[in-house]
Image (cartoon, one colour):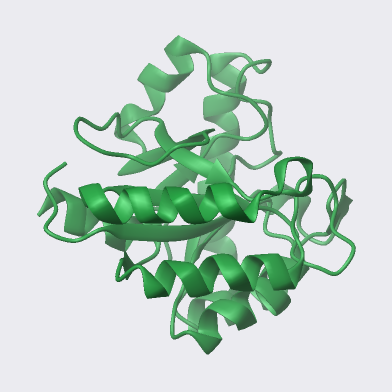
Amino acid sequence: MKSAVPIISFTFDDFLRSALQTGGAILENFGITGTYYASLGCMGQKGPSGELFVFQDLRELIDKGHELGCHTYSHLNAWKASTHDFMVSIDQNRKALSEYLPGTEFRTFSYPIDPPRPYTKKRISNKFRCCRGGGQKYNHGTLDLNILHAYFLDKRRENLGKAIDLINENAAVCGWLIFATHDVCDNPSPYGCTPNYFEEIVRHSVKSGATILPVARALELVSA
């Protein structure tokens, strides 16, 4: 990675309705768009983090300029699922997207629940421009585009000071910091965060002078 500016991306796993309605509204107030990773086979359901997206949310997300990413069709665990089943679920998600939003494609991917099996990680390499994992750190130097690092903002490890320090470190080295969370609401699940906390993270990200882009667009800048 050789970038003249620091880069930050905001991502949301599982595509909770609150992530778009509340989290998305906060991003939009700062003139920012994010990346939402969806399992289309789970549309309209209620998960551990709350209500998942419904069909009209897909169109709203695209209309507002956010990126829609792939999270497998059935939200399969990237470690526990066989590589065959995992790849089938990715293809199912692509097919469903072509039916729901013709002309739209998934450009990036996020591994559900756990890091991937090595063979799954290898097989997925020609399916997407990049894939995101976790790791609680930013990306810098040599990047593995099949499992980019991300920093999760969630109730289990909420620490504003640590997140701000990471934003500043990322700015100093012109790295690529990818934030990830699930629901954004006043009473979040263990995997989500409150609107106030999320807004503080966004505010400090903007203040750091970073270029803030969805993952696919950020990758174009990194690649350039």
